[in-house]
Image (cartoon, rainbow, N blue to C red; front, side):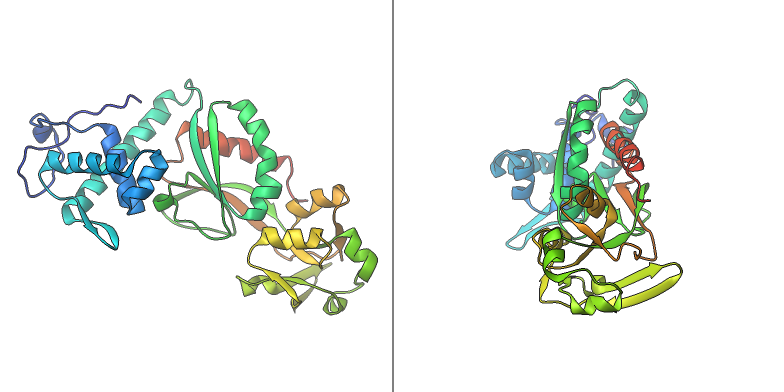
Length: 328
């Protein structure tokens, strides 16, 4: 879409904001579409410096642009304090309208140009560290070969991100995330299994039963104790143990690194573990036993952005990529 927008402001002074066809023709200093996008990011991030870093421009430039938006209406849209920024009532109204307008234009652009327009632009994708390193990173070369004008920014953290506030286009999440603000595409179903390195097995041997795990060094999760309740099933028989051990980490990627270093037995998703087994870097522990429930993994998108060509292209690609590597 062109970076231009029909005038939307009303003459100064004014005490309330109303965007409609009767007021747009009387604006001496009309706003552009990018002004609306800028204000949405200011509202979402709550910081001019954060927006400046995102746009790679000086903070003073963002401040001047905000002042120009406020001047177009003759009202203060943002409260500034030592604690950060907050929207005034007029700012809340403006933000609501700006989100709606930009969202509708983005969706219209996707509908009208999605079939013929080259897929391009920056896509921010959030995921856990282990999924990033062992699953998503190996998928990127073919994605960029297919869509060379794309730019992918991986946001890697073992936490649930605020997609709107942090500008995330796609979040790769396990479980069943539900919200009316989200659109989900199922990528795969995973199970968890136990793994150790050949070096660990050479020094400590393999357990021959679930009960024998208590005699081994188990790598546990310090940030989410619920992940230390290992539920295992085999031929309809289920066992549950509370894993304990001298080594723990607050993220799954470090747990995998500990297992690879021969420090103990770790539980990880098989889509990560099985390729490492094929590379002879890990060996399965109690291979007949696995998590009793298959765990869905989905691409989560904000409802107003899921039809953007760049977002849709990434998700379509990952749906096909995961299907070729689905957990048996």
